[in-house]
Amino acid sequence: MLLAIDAGNTNIVFAVFDGDRVRGEWRASTDTDRTADELGVWLMQLLTIEGMRREDIQSAIIASVVPAMVFSLKTLCRRYFGCDPVVVGSEGVNLGINVLLDRPEEVGADRLVNAVAAHGCYPGPMIVIDFGTATTFDVIDAEGNYCGGAISPGINLSLEALHMAAAKLPRVAIGRPRTVIGKATVPAMQSGIFWGYVGLIEGLVKRIQEEYGSPMLVVATGGLAPLFAEATKVIDKLDPDLTLRGLLEIHRRNARKD
Image (tube, rainbow, N blue to C red):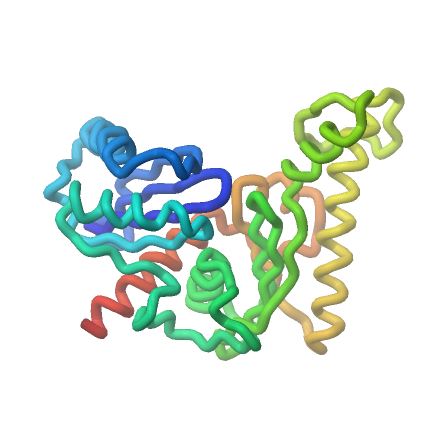
């Protein structure tokens, strides 16, 4: 079995693959002070609940946008599962795609993993929107090459900034308001954040397609993707497991290479 680890700025996702099937998937908050042993004990308990043993894990792969987490995650894989993980972005790791940027080393591992998965699942060219701590818009051409994209603050980040910077504005929950015109402060904030974000999505997708010069499939992933996929017609596909499938594919490519 394969342990796939996707370490984002807010959460770390751990998933166990048995072939193409996900046997277990769990989330932990991203905390750079958390040791490999803390993560290991936590993960061992979850594996046991799902009827798995540490000996069942034979290999691992890591994609992290938090450099300070990589050492602990690599130590976790070595100490608790006896394997050296593939780390996306490390020298010699084959992604199977070309990164057509001036400085390809700056691209977040999660964006490259999404590009690999999206090209394997859908016909290009396409835009992949990942709703995470940041919302990323990534362009993949018909050959699967990563062509760049755009990065905007995630909606949770926007909400927190609004609350922190404006003394009289409370912290509000994300949701789809029934009306655009809010009749009180909280509904007005919810409307501005939600529908403003829908406008950001539609505007960026339109500009990217115009600049690219052809129609593009739009694929959405990430925790809040379902909320926005229901609110706008520019999103064609909703794929919550895109990043995990990308990790699985990259691991297979590098296992074949070895």
